[in-house]
Image (cartoon, rainbow, N blue to C red; front, side, top):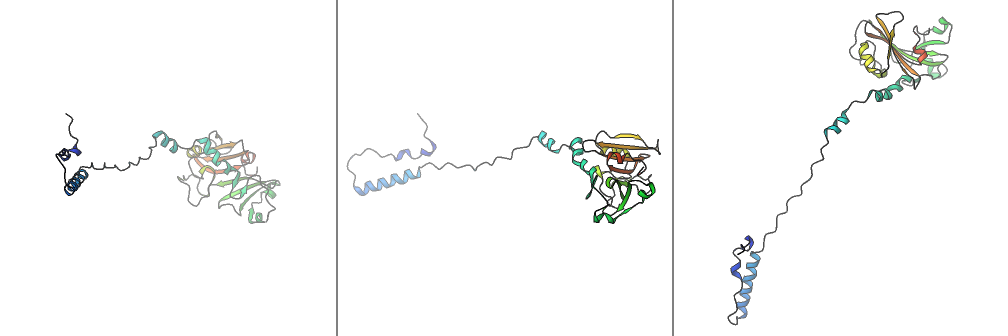
Length: 239
């Protein structure tokens, strides 16, 4: 015998019995009304609708996060900053100099008259404080930053008022830290006058025909200059 479903329990006895004889209209209507009410009471309840489940955001795998946070390769970093070797603010390496109205704001060091040549040093103008610019044959050849104080004093971080130099370098920093910041391939050579305590640290951007050189003494950077490779090789300013 099949079990009676829960929603049918208590309703099976309401089935109409066989007619034994004629039933009057009012009685019939009363019986029918009772059956309708009973059946309505026995109607199964509407099933509950579960709330829609909002899917959780797709988790990002650890390798993807690691790739996003990975440091920029040295080659990419070099490509992003090598353009700094060709400029300083609005000034450009190889750009003509001396005839534009704004060039009169720069102050010459008198090297052209002293050396009787085509090389001159300038400061002032739009150059940051403490920086100078070499001009050869009326073309900007290199930019230079020299230590202003005692070269034996180590400067652990770039001073807030110091100009921004290529690769985040500054004078007074350790030579080890400076070499770490330069692109791969920087060459160390003995200083012409301060060896064995001093060295040159030179990196050449052959693709753009530019170079940067650092002078070091007792493990600290004393000078930084960059521009034309030939101008960077000059060890006595214009000589």
